Image (cartoon, rainbow, N blue to C red; front, top):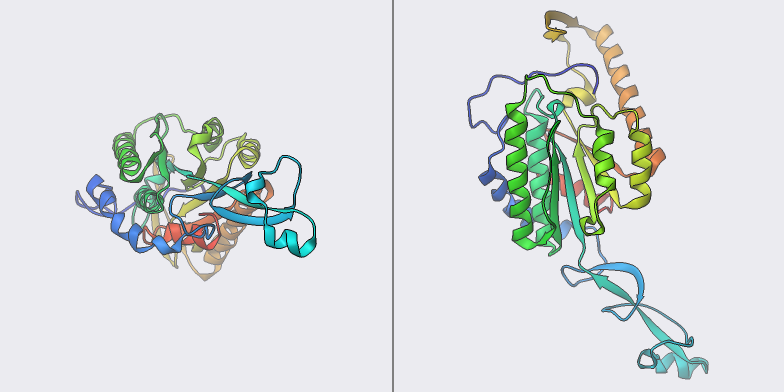
Length: 316
């Protein structure tokens, strides 16, 4: 995103910094159950139900208003009617199970990082989100994508929905890692947003977990469409260096196939931080302008912190 790629340290096979095993994602279920009370819905005490804007017969009382022709006489509030001298009826909110789809970015830019790969942090966070959806007895699904693949699991309740989604994540992660270092046409994020905008209603709310790299020329237009058509939130996974910049020191890097070295001191390090702040602020402004909730999670956060961030923002 910022014109450089941070190369991760050489790690042995099986390291949690570079690998995302399926059994590890399944094991994150315990974390989701522990954080079940963090749901920010606060709409109904009954699990698996979310209050909609449709009024009618349901389980959740909404309001009392004057009786109108066509109202169900069984819902007349006789106490209010007697007190006011005019017939009043009780209205309820219709409640339905809801769905949440996690759109997981596994493009090449996600396979970079100083402490651990952004793809690993994002995959763990996606898995924890899916388990939390299941813990709330809602339908869970995933749309996982890299430069060439786009795999979508079918929204389903409880463990079935999560396990199907984790299988998709596992397959796309493995395929994406195999393509690292190979010549692959970059995939802009606007193409993915266009795919999200074509999802059916059963996909429900969408949380896009991405590093926001390579937004593409139609990014703002597709973002505006997403804001109108569906409930979309963006959870950006960022390497700490993308937020606070590197500390003073000497750094080796490769640019256009050639090795380079740069030394950062207090002077030029401050200039780097200023530029990072400008880029991060400009990115946040694009989401704010579109009316799409935008949250940032560093790769140092734990998997369950993704749900906490969304819950604190009132998005789940």
